[in-house]
Image (cartoon, rainbow, N blue to C red):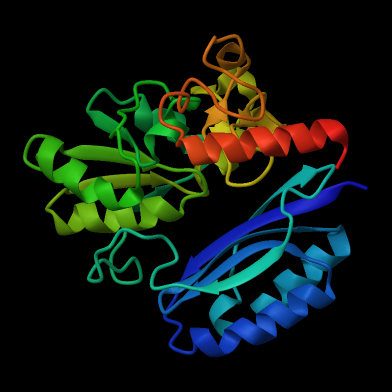
Length: 292
């Protein structure tokens, strides 16, 4: 059976977020939904999977709260659930930048639709910045995009402060997987004096869904935070797999490396796995071969 994978987020003041946890968890469980939903005082962020009817029911349930009445979502499909379980978690932030004063509800950059994105990033005066982490950048990004070389989104403000001068860079275009990181990234950059800050509405996923491959300025695949690992144009499943040793996406080329061991390690972690972790993975591999 083909499953629907729905992603959504909304920044909205949610002082009662803790009280919403159990009712949302119970409703999703009743619908057979799997995935992760984050709740915080600043809003909601989630990716869930289920059959068509169940996804529609959960989205309707969410939108029955007037604060989520205009909640937008993106969809893709999967033949198997990309999630093993359901989690509804309470967090300080729905996307963590670590700056409490940055509030997209108060100030945010200019949204750019996927159909207008190519024009924006083709402007020679525009600096294009990938707000995602280094391992995400490594398997795909937009032409001429800068890589901040971050290991977590918390490091993005430091990258901006060290490498970008608001008096030098007049126009900045930001993008991320689904759009949520750019809400905070654009809000932060505006607070630092940048004048024109654009961000891709709906993120890379919406761009890959709507922009034909022959018109696309995207190169490679897009990392996603579930068992699909990566998607390509039209949100078709990508070619990458996940390394069980470190969680890094690995390509077919990575598998030809002498540092790749199936079910153990990859070129990104072969020299950093602890003996304990390596031993545990080797035992798990032996058990799988024996069919235990």
